Amino acid sequence: MVENCFTVAVFCLAGVILSVLLKQYCSEHSVTAAAAVCAVAAAAAVTMLEWPLSEIRYFFSQAGVSESYIELIFKSVSICFITNISSELCRSSGETAIASAAEMWGRAALTVLCIPVLEDIVQLIDKLVQE
Image 1 (tube, rainbow, N blue to C red):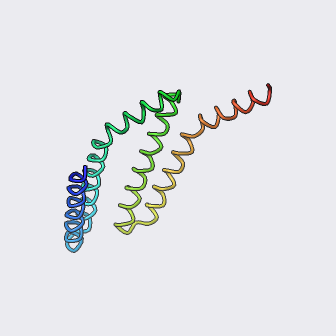
Image 2: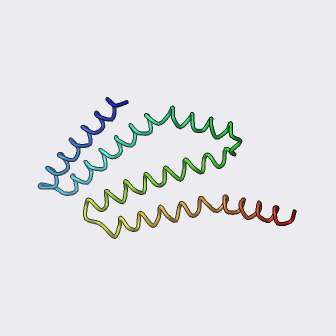
Image 3: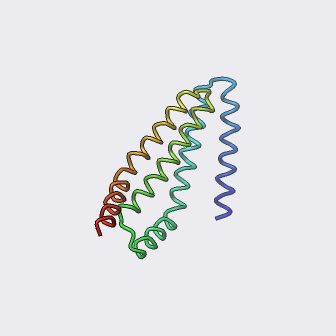
């Protein structure tokens, strides 16, 4: 695992160097290079997390946690990662307003994802109050 972390770190640093060099000549290519490096690093992270995520899913199912809640957790974490990477790419290219809009979208998406959980909590409270 340490070797993989080192490999990804070196890859990202090489991407930064390439992006900085490209920024001097063509800023559009610089952003494209940064986005490509982010996509490759994200794909490496997803590949690395395959086994731990299946273990976490197994632990939650053994604890009696509903599959819909497990999916909700993974979707929420994915939205956070995607939103963070996209907003940072926007910031690094000087587009802070677009970065803020991306973050706002991420917050809105998380809010929408939480609605079924809030509904379940309200139903549970209602059930407890009636008893």
